[in-house]
Length: 355
Image (cartoon, rainbow, N blue to C red; front, side, top):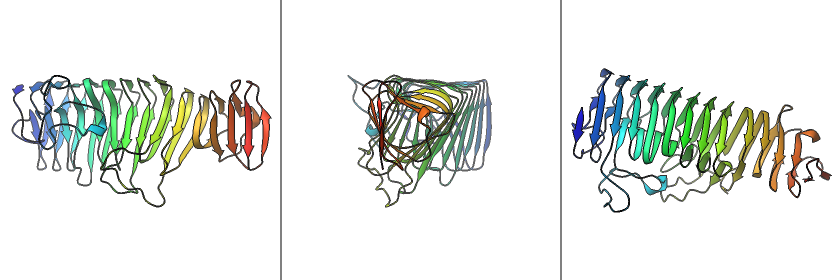
C-alpha cells in the first residue's frame, strides 16, 4: 500500500490497517508506505487485536524542521517538551486493544514509530525480533498511562529516544539492542494522578545513548536494569529534574519517588537527582560501579562495589563494608549513616560519614 495526503485523526480512512470494535486482523508480508500529516500505517482500538508479521511499515509524514512551516491542529505535532519533531506516527494502539509485531521493520521520519493513546483502562503492545527506526527526531515507542509495551530481541535505531513513558505506563526490553541519539527512555507525568508510578524493566541487551540513559521529569518511577551493557554519551545514567511542561502533574504530599535498581553489571556513569519533589533510591546487586551519585539513598549488596569518580552525596540505607567503597584521588564521598567518621580510601579519595 502507498497512501499519500494528510489524515484527519488517529483512526480514520487514511490509515493503512485499522482494526476496531472487537475485530481481529492479521497481516502477513505487507509493505505500507504513507506520506502526509497523521497518515498512520496501522491502528488498533476498541477491544480489537492486530497482528503484523514479516512486514515493513514506513510513515514519512510531511517535511518538517528548519525551512518548513509547522503543522497546525489538534495532535498534528508532538508537544514541545517531548524534545522531538514530526507530524505523523507509524502505528498507534488505543482503548483496550492488543497489538503484536513479529519480524517487522517499523520506521518513522519523525514523532514516533510505535505509539499509544487513550488506553481507557488497558492497552498491550508487543514487538518481537523487529527493527524500530526513527530517522529524524522521533521515538521508537510510547507508553501512555495503563499501556504495557514489551519488546523482545528488537533493534532500536532512533534519532531521539527508544521510549517515552507517561504516568502509569510501563515498558519492558528483553535482549534488545538500542542506539539512541538522545535518551534511552524519557519518563514524565502530565495531566495525570500524582500517585502514578511508571515502570521500566531492561533485561540483557545493550544501550548506547548520546545523552542521559534515562531522564525523569517529575515522575514517580521504577527503573530496573539486569545484565545490560550501557554506554552513555554524556556519562549520565539517570538524571531526575523538575518537569518544565506546563501540564506537569502536581505532586502528592508523599510521592513514591524514583527507585533505581541495577543487577549483574559493570556500570559507568553518574546518577544525578535534581528533582526537589521526591527522593531517589538506588539499589545495586552484583554490580561494579564507577561514577558519581548526587543526593541518592544507596544500598549495596555484598557483591557490589562503588568507585566514586567525582564528589558525591549519599545516604547509606544498608550496611556497607569498607572495601565496597572507593574514590579517585581528590574525590570525596559524603555519606549519611549510623556513625560519623572520616576515612582515607585506597584510590586516593576520602569518605566522610555524617551521623
